[in-house]
Amino acid sequence: MTTQNRGPLRIGIVGVGFGAAVHVPGFLSEGWEVPVLWGRRVERARETAERLGVAEVAEDWRDLVARDDLDAVAIATPPGAHLEMVTAALEAGKHVLCEKPFALDAAEAEQMRALAEAQGRTAMVAHEFRFAPQRAQIKELLEQGYIGTPLLVSAELLMGRPAGDPPPLTWNARTAEGGGMLGGLGSHFIDGFRHWFGEIATTRGALRTARPDRTDPATGALVQADADDTFAFTLEFENGVVVSMTASSAVSPSQGGCITITGSDGVLVATQRGPNPEPDGVVLAGKSSDRTLEALPVPEHCRPFEDDRDHRLVAFRLLVREFERGIREGVSPSPSFEDGVRCQEVLDAIRESARG
Image (cartoon, rainbow, N blue to C red; front, side, top):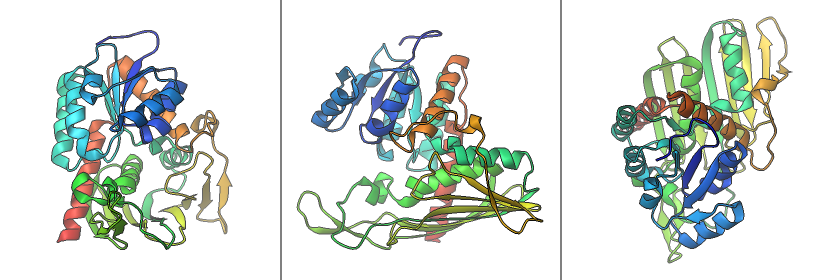
Protein backbone atom coordinates (compact mmCIF):
# COMPACT_ATOMS: atom_id res chain seq x y z
CA MET A 1 0.00 0.00 0.00
CA THR A 2 1.23 3.50 -0.75
CA THR A 3 1.82 5.97 2.05
CA GLN A 4 1.40 9.48 0.73
CA ASN A 5 2.19 12.58 2.75
CA ARG A 6 1.93 14.85 -0.27
CA GLY A 7 -0.10 14.79 -3.42
CA PRO A 8 -3.56 13.33 -3.96
CA LEU A 9 -4.77 10.36 -1.97
CA ARG A 10 -6.13 7.33 -3.83
CA ILE A 11 -9.31 5.51 -2.87
CA GLY A 12 -11.27 2.54 -4.14
CA ILE A 13 -15.08 2.58 -3.91
CA VAL A 14 -16.98 -0.59 -2.97
CA GLY A 15 -20.62 -0.27 -4.03
CA VAL A 16 -22.08 1.73 -6.91
CA GLY A 17 -25.50 2.82 -5.63
CA PHE A 18 -24.86 5.63 -3.16
CA GLY A 19 -21.20 5.12 -4.05
CA ALA A 20 -21.84 6.29 -7.61
CA ALA A 21 -24.21 9.11 -6.68
CA VAL A 22 -22.14 10.64 -3.87
CA HIS A 23 -18.87 8.88 -3.00
CA VAL A 24 -17.15 8.99 -6.39
CA PRO A 25 -18.09 12.61 -7.28
CA GLY A 26 -17.43 13.70 -3.69
CA PHE A 27 -13.92 12.29 -3.52
CA LEU A 28 -13.04 13.49 -7.04
CA SER A 29 -14.26 17.01 -6.23
CA GLU A 30 -12.00 17.07 -3.16
CA GLY A 31 -8.92 16.24 -5.21
CA TRP A 32 -8.70 12.51 -4.55
CA GLU A 33 -7.97 9.95 -7.24
CA VAL A 34 -10.51 7.16 -7.71
CA PRO A 35 -8.77 4.56 -9.90
CA VAL A 36 -11.10 1.62 -9.25
CA LEU A 37 -14.58 0.70 -8.09
CA TRP A 38 -16.56 -2.47 -7.52
CA GLY A 39 -20.25 -3.26 -7.78
CA ARG A 40 -22.19 -6.45 -7.23
CA ARG A 41 -23.41 -6.35 -10.83
CA VAL A 42 -20.32 -6.07 -12.99
CA GLU A 43 -22.05 -4.60 -16.03
CA ARG A 44 -23.63 -1.85 -13.96
CA ALA A 45 -20.26 -1.18 -12.37
CA ARG A 46 -18.63 -0.85 -15.78
CA GLU A 47 -21.30 1.56 -16.98
CA THR A 48 -20.86 3.60 -13.80
CA ALA A 49 -17.07 3.66 -14.16
CA GLU A 50 -17.30 4.84 -17.76
CA ARG A 51 -19.82 7.55 -16.87
CA LEU A 52 -17.79 8.85 -13.93
CA GLY A 53 -14.34 8.53 -15.50
CA VAL A 54 -13.07 5.74 -13.24
CA ALA A 55 -10.40 3.75 -15.08
CA GLU A 56 -10.91 0.24 -13.67
CA VAL A 57 -13.61 -2.08 -12.36
CA ALA A 58 -12.71 -4.88 -9.96
CA GLU A 59 -14.62 -8.11 -10.52
CA ASP A 60 -14.16 -9.10 -6.87
CA TRP A 61 -14.18 -6.59 -4.00
CA ARG A 62 -11.40 -8.60 -2.32
CA ASP A 63 -9.11 -7.77 -5.24
CA LEU A 64 -9.91 -4.08 -4.79
CA VAL A 65 -9.11 -3.89 -1.08
CA ALA A 66 -5.88 -5.90 -1.60
CA ARG A 67 -4.43 -3.46 -4.16
CA ASP A 68 -1.16 -1.85 -3.08
CA ASP A 69 -1.80 1.42 -4.94
CA LEU A 70 -4.70 2.57 -2.74
CA ASP A 71 -4.51 4.60 0.46
CA ALA A 72 -8.11 4.04 1.47
CA VAL A 73 -11.32 2.19 0.75
CA ALA A 74 -14.87 3.57 0.93
CA ILE A 75 -17.49 0.91 1.62
CA ALA A 76 -20.94 1.88 0.35
CA THR A 77 -22.80 -1.42 0.52
CA PRO A 78 -25.71 -2.69 2.64
CA PRO A 79 -24.65 -3.26 6.26
CA GLY A 80 -24.74 -7.04 6.15
CA ALA A 81 -21.42 -6.99 4.27
CA HIS A 82 -19.66 -4.32 6.33
CA LEU A 83 -17.91 -6.55 8.88
CA GLU A 84 -16.25 -8.75 6.27
CA MET A 85 -15.33 -5.88 3.96
CA VAL A 86 -14.07 -3.51 6.66
CA THR A 87 -12.04 -6.31 8.23
CA ALA A 88 -10.40 -7.17 4.92
CA ALA A 89 -9.64 -3.53 4.13
CA LEU A 90 -8.09 -2.83 7.54
CA GLU A 91 -6.03 -6.02 7.44
CA ALA A 92 -4.78 -4.88 4.03
CA GLY A 93 -3.56 -1.68 5.69
CA LYS A 94 -6.17 0.64 4.21
CA HIS A 95 -7.86 3.59 5.85
CA VAL A 96 -11.63 3.06 5.77
CA LEU A 97 -14.75 5.17 5.36
CA CYS A 98 -17.79 2.96 5.97
CA GLU A 99 -21.41 3.78 5.21
CA LYS A 100 -24.18 3.62 7.76
CA PRO A 101 -25.89 1.66 9.22
CA PHE A 102 -22.40 0.77 10.46
CA ALA A 103 -23.14 -2.85 11.44
CA LEU A 104 -25.83 -5.40 12.12
CA ASP A 105 -25.30 -5.03 15.88
CA ALA A 106 -22.98 -3.49 18.45
CA ALA A 107 -20.80 -6.62 18.68
CA GLU A 108 -19.91 -6.31 14.98
CA ALA A 109 -19.34 -2.59 15.37
CA GLU A 110 -16.95 -3.15 18.27
CA GLN A 111 -14.99 -5.74 16.26
CA MET A 112 -14.40 -3.18 13.52
CA ARG A 113 -13.52 -0.41 15.98
CA ALA A 114 -11.00 -2.59 17.81
CA LEU A 115 -9.35 -3.75 14.59
CA ALA A 116 -9.04 -0.17 13.28
CA GLU A 117 -7.37 0.84 16.54
CA ALA A 118 -5.02 -2.15 16.44
CA GLN A 119 -4.08 -1.44 12.82
CA GLY A 120 -3.59 2.29 13.48
CA ARG A 121 -5.76 3.26 10.51
CA THR A 122 -8.05 6.25 10.08
CA ALA A 123 -11.58 4.84 10.30
CA MET A 124 -14.76 6.88 9.97
CA VAL A 125 -18.49 6.27 9.51
CA ALA A 126 -20.31 8.23 6.81
CA HIS A 127 -22.63 10.21 9.06
CA GLU A 128 -22.05 13.17 6.79
CA PHE A 129 -25.06 15.13 8.02
CA ARG A 130 -23.09 16.30 11.04
CA PHE A 131 -21.59 18.60 8.42
CA ALA A 132 -24.85 19.70 6.77
CA PRO A 133 -24.79 23.52 7.06
CA GLN A 134 -28.03 23.69 9.05
CA ARG A 135 -26.89 21.09 11.60
CA ALA A 136 -23.37 22.47 11.87
CA GLN A 137 -24.88 25.88 12.64
CA ILE A 138 -27.07 24.35 15.36
CA LYS A 139 -23.98 22.80 16.94
CA GLU A 140 -22.31 26.20 17.07
CA LEU A 141 -25.41 27.92 18.49
CA LEU A 142 -25.67 25.31 21.25
CA GLU A 143 -21.99 25.73 22.11
CA GLN A 144 -22.44 29.52 22.20
CA GLY A 145 -25.32 29.14 24.68
CA TYR A 146 -27.81 30.76 22.30
CA ILE A 147 -30.78 28.99 23.95
CA GLY A 148 -29.22 28.66 27.39
CA THR A 149 -29.25 25.13 28.80
CA PRO A 150 -30.77 22.63 26.32
CA LEU A 151 -33.73 20.87 27.90
CA LEU A 152 -36.04 19.09 25.48
CA VAL A 153 -35.90 18.05 21.82
CA SER A 154 -38.78 16.92 19.64
CA ALA A 155 -38.05 15.44 16.21
CA GLU A 156 -40.35 14.18 13.49
CA LEU A 157 -39.69 12.65 10.08
CA LEU A 158 -42.72 11.61 8.05
CA MET A 159 -41.89 10.18 4.65
CA GLY A 160 -43.64 7.65 2.47
CA ARG A 161 -44.88 6.47 -0.85
CA PRO A 162 -48.14 7.00 -2.70
CA ALA A 163 -50.80 4.32 -2.80
CA GLY A 164 -50.47 1.82 -5.62
CA ASP A 165 -48.45 -1.24 -6.49
CA PRO A 166 -46.05 -2.32 -3.74
CA PRO A 167 -42.38 -1.51 -4.39
CA PRO A 168 -39.82 -4.25 -5.06
CA LEU A 169 -38.40 -6.18 -2.10
CA THR A 170 -34.83 -5.02 -1.42
CA TRP A 171 -32.31 -5.52 1.38
CA ASN A 172 -33.71 -2.46 3.13
CA ALA A 173 -36.95 -4.37 3.79
CA ARG A 174 -35.17 -7.30 5.44
CA THR A 175 -34.19 -7.19 9.12
CA ALA A 176 -31.56 -9.92 8.69
CA GLU A 177 -29.69 -7.75 6.18
CA GLY A 178 -29.74 -4.63 8.36
CA GLY A 179 -32.74 -3.01 6.69
CA GLY A 180 -35.31 -0.72 8.22
CA MET A 181 -35.93 2.97 8.67
CA LEU A 182 -34.40 3.07 12.15
CA GLY A 183 -30.99 2.07 10.85
CA GLY A 184 -31.27 3.81 7.50
CA LEU A 185 -32.39 7.27 8.67
CA GLY A 186 -32.75 7.03 12.44
CA SER A 187 -29.03 6.35 12.78
CA HIS A 188 -28.25 9.75 11.21
CA PHE A 189 -30.47 11.50 13.74
CA ILE A 190 -29.02 9.54 16.68
CA ASP A 191 -25.49 10.41 15.59
CA GLY A 192 -26.53 14.05 15.25
CA PHE A 193 -28.11 14.13 18.71
CA ARG A 194 -24.96 12.61 20.23
CA HIS A 195 -22.89 15.23 18.40
CA TRP A 196 -25.02 17.99 19.94
CA PHE A 197 -25.67 16.66 23.44
CA GLY A 198 -23.08 14.00 24.33
CA GLU A 199 -23.62 10.50 25.66
CA ILE A 200 -26.99 8.80 26.16
CA ALA A 201 -27.99 7.35 29.54
CA THR A 202 -31.29 5.57 28.81
CA THR A 203 -33.24 4.56 25.74
CA ARG A 204 -36.81 3.47 25.04
CA GLY A 205 -38.37 2.73 21.70
CA ALA A 206 -41.04 1.14 19.53
CA LEU A 207 -40.87 -0.29 16.00
CA ARG A 208 -43.59 -1.13 13.48
CA THR A 209 -43.90 -2.39 9.93
CA ALA A 210 -46.96 -0.41 8.91
CA ARG A 211 -46.94 -1.14 5.16
CA PRO A 212 -45.19 -4.50 4.68
CA ASP A 213 -46.39 -5.35 1.15
CA ARG A 214 -43.58 -5.73 -1.36
CA THR A 215 -43.19 -7.29 -4.81
CA ASP A 216 -40.70 -10.09 -5.42
CA PRO A 217 -38.52 -8.66 -8.24
CA ALA A 218 -37.92 -12.12 -9.69
CA THR A 219 -41.47 -13.49 -9.73
CA GLY A 220 -43.72 -10.48 -9.26
CA ALA A 221 -45.42 -12.22 -6.35
CA LEU A 222 -46.61 -10.30 -3.31
CA VAL A 223 -44.22 -10.77 -0.36
CA GLN A 224 -43.89 -9.22 3.08
CA ALA A 225 -41.16 -6.96 4.48
CA ASP A 226 -40.14 -7.62 8.07
CA ALA A 227 -37.94 -4.55 8.64
CA ASP A 228 -39.39 -1.50 10.36
CA ASP A 229 -40.83 1.39 8.37
CA THR A 230 -42.00 3.27 11.47
CA PHE A 231 -40.28 4.00 14.76
CA ALA A 232 -40.45 6.12 17.89
CA PHE A 233 -37.84 6.53 20.60
CA THR A 234 -37.00 8.56 23.66
CA LEU A 235 -33.38 9.24 24.62
CA GLU A 236 -32.32 10.62 27.97
CA PHE A 237 -28.81 12.10 27.86
CA GLU A 238 -26.30 12.15 30.68
CA ASN A 239 -26.56 15.96 30.78
CA GLY A 240 -30.33 15.79 31.31
CA VAL A 241 -31.53 16.56 27.77
CA VAL A 242 -34.53 14.47 26.70
CA VAL A 243 -35.02 13.74 22.99
CA SER A 244 -38.18 12.20 21.53
CA MET A 245 -38.49 11.24 17.87
CA THR A 246 -41.26 9.80 15.73
CA ALA A 247 -40.60 8.72 12.15
CA SER A 248 -42.22 6.75 9.37
CA SER A 249 -41.67 5.98 5.71
CA ALA A 250 -45.28 4.77 5.42
CA VAL A 251 -46.97 8.19 5.30
CA SER A 252 -48.80 9.52 2.27
CA PRO A 253 -48.29 12.26 1.32
CA SER A 254 -44.83 12.83 2.78
CA GLN A 255 -44.52 15.65 5.29
CA GLY A 256 -40.75 16.05 5.63
CA GLY A 257 -38.96 16.54 8.91
CA CYS A 258 -38.65 18.96 11.81
CA ILE A 259 -36.36 19.20 14.84
CA THR A 260 -37.31 21.56 17.69
CA ILE A 261 -34.74 22.19 20.41
CA THR A 262 -35.94 24.04 23.50
CA GLY A 263 -33.67 25.50 26.12
CA SER A 264 -33.80 27.61 29.25
CA ASP A 265 -33.52 30.81 27.17
CA GLY A 266 -34.86 30.07 23.71
CA VAL A 267 -35.66 27.65 20.93
CA LEU A 268 -34.10 26.42 17.67
CA VAL A 269 -36.10 24.84 14.84
CA ALA A 270 -34.77 23.05 11.76
CA THR A 271 -37.03 21.73 9.02
CA GLN A 272 -36.29 19.66 5.94
CA ARG A 273 -38.38 18.84 2.91
CA GLY A 274 -37.15 15.28 2.42
CA PRO A 275 -35.40 12.49 4.32
CA ASN A 276 -32.14 14.43 4.63
CA PRO A 277 -31.19 18.01 5.55
CA GLU A 278 -30.69 20.17 2.48
CA PRO A 279 -27.58 22.33 1.97
CA ASP A 280 -29.78 25.45 1.87
CA GLY A 281 -31.63 24.60 5.08
CA VAL A 282 -32.04 27.42 7.59
CA VAL A 283 -32.26 27.57 11.36
CA LEU A 284 -35.25 29.35 12.89
CA ALA A 285 -34.46 30.77 16.31
CA GLY A 286 -35.97 32.82 19.08
CA LYS A 287 -35.03 33.91 22.57
CA SER A 288 -37.42 33.36 25.48
CA SER A 289 -38.45 37.04 25.27
CA ASP A 290 -39.30 36.87 21.52
CA ARG A 291 -42.83 36.46 20.22
CA THR A 292 -41.79 34.91 16.88
CA LEU A 293 -38.97 32.87 15.38
CA GLU A 294 -36.64 34.35 12.78
CA ALA A 295 -34.30 32.71 10.29
CA LEU A 296 -30.65 33.14 11.20
CA PRO A 297 -28.10 33.83 8.47
CA VAL A 298 -25.95 30.79 7.71
CA PRO A 299 -22.26 31.44 8.50
CA GLU A 300 -20.08 31.12 5.41
CA HIS A 301 -17.82 28.56 7.08
CA CYS A 302 -20.86 26.29 7.57
CA ARG A 303 -21.59 26.40 3.83
CA PRO A 304 -18.24 27.17 2.22
CA PHE A 305 -19.27 26.12 -1.31
CA GLU A 306 -22.28 25.11 -3.40
CA ASP A 307 -22.75 21.77 -5.15
CA ASP A 308 -26.12 21.28 -6.82
CA ARG A 309 -25.40 17.85 -8.37
CA ASP A 310 -26.85 16.03 -5.33
CA HIS A 311 -28.25 17.54 -2.13
CA ARG A 312 -25.98 15.27 -0.05
CA LEU A 313 -22.72 16.33 -1.66
CA VAL A 314 -21.98 19.48 0.36
CA ALA A 315 -22.12 17.56 3.64
CA PHE A 316 -20.30 14.55 2.20
CA ARG A 317 -17.45 16.62 0.77
CA LEU A 318 -16.96 18.28 4.15
CA LEU A 319 -16.79 14.78 5.67
CA VAL A 320 -14.18 13.82 3.06
CA ARG A 321 -12.06 16.78 4.13
CA GLU A 322 -12.09 15.45 7.70
CA PHE A 323 -11.24 11.94 6.44
CA GLU A 324 -8.24 13.32 4.57
CA ARG A 325 -7.13 15.34 7.58
CA GLY A 326 -7.33 12.21 9.68
CA ILE A 327 -5.17 10.23 7.27
CA ARG A 328 -2.52 12.93 7.02
CA GLU A 329 -2.44 13.54 10.78
CA GLY A 330 -2.74 9.91 11.84
CA VAL A 331 -6.05 10.25 13.71
CA SER A 332 -9.70 9.20 13.28
CA PRO A 333 -11.89 12.32 13.41
CA SER A 334 -15.54 12.10 14.37
CA PRO A 335 -17.74 10.48 13.26
CA SER A 336 -15.24 7.70 13.96
CA PHE A 337 -15.72 3.98 14.40
CA GLU A 338 -16.03 4.77 18.11
CA ASP A 339 -19.03 6.95 17.26
CA GLY A 340 -20.31 4.10 15.10
CA VAL A 341 -20.20 1.74 18.08
CA ARG A 342 -22.06 4.21 20.31
CA CYS A 343 -24.76 4.75 17.68
CA GLN A 344 -25.12 1.01 17.15
CA GLU A 345 -25.53 0.48 20.89
CA VAL A 346 -28.45 2.91 20.84
CA LEU A 347 -30.02 1.18 17.82
CA ASP A 348 -29.69 -2.18 19.60
CA ALA A 349 -31.25 -0.73 22.77
CA ILE A 350 -34.22 0.69 20.85
CA ARG A 351 -34.79 -2.71 19.19
CA GLU A 352 -34.51 -4.49 22.53
CA SER A 353 -36.96 -2.05 24.09
CA ALA A 354 -39.36 -2.58 21.19
CA ARG A 355 -39.22 -6.37 21.67
CA GLY A 356 -39.74 -6.14 25.44
